Amino acid sequence: AQTVTQSQPEMSVQEAETVTLSCTYDTSESDYYLFWYKQPPSRQMILVIRQEAYKQQNATENRFSVNFQKAAKSFSLKISDSQLGDAAMYFCAVKLVFGAGTILRVKS
Amino acid sequence: ETGVTQSPTHLIKTRGQQVTLRCSSQSGHNTVSWYQQALGQGPQFIFQYYREEENGRGNFPPRFSGLQFPNYSSELNVNALELDDSALYLCASSLGTAKYYEQYFGPGTRLTVT
Image (cartoon, rainbow over all chains, first blue to last red):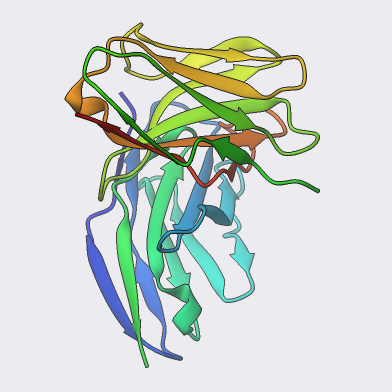
């Protein structure tokens, strides 16, 4: 069975600094997509970034980037220049399986 | 462009009853997926519908069933409700199978079973 593990239940970052959220997964497939979703308090879940497993280049979306290590089955999310609006629950997902989430708190 | 909507927002049911949750997909999307999210947990995949056919199912019993209509809106039905069914139910639509495509989530339906 496919699993997705987010080992950090909660993380804190100072405004304007950088934070990295970890995610590891297990799958037997070779072609798959990985996602990071953000769920702000009482608001809808939205996509942050997507990575195609067959692409070696790490995806980047403005202040958000990933470090995808296919052999290690690791898919971490780096948030640069953190902003107060980044505070949310972040979920890593591989295909249709989601991790348990990491609560990100941003301190001013 | 209208986003994903869900109804109702909140629902309280008694153990043993049946419930129907509704979802309208984003315009142009032909795939709808349903998730159960317990408090403080990640979403658990229930099933996915693609062009009115079930196209993948998670580890949920048959009392969880669904339907997708020609306009790609969808329903989730849960029979014989149990206390553990209390959760936030999320609907998400996508251009194709959610394994590969970005999912657009609705606000969810909060179900409480007493």
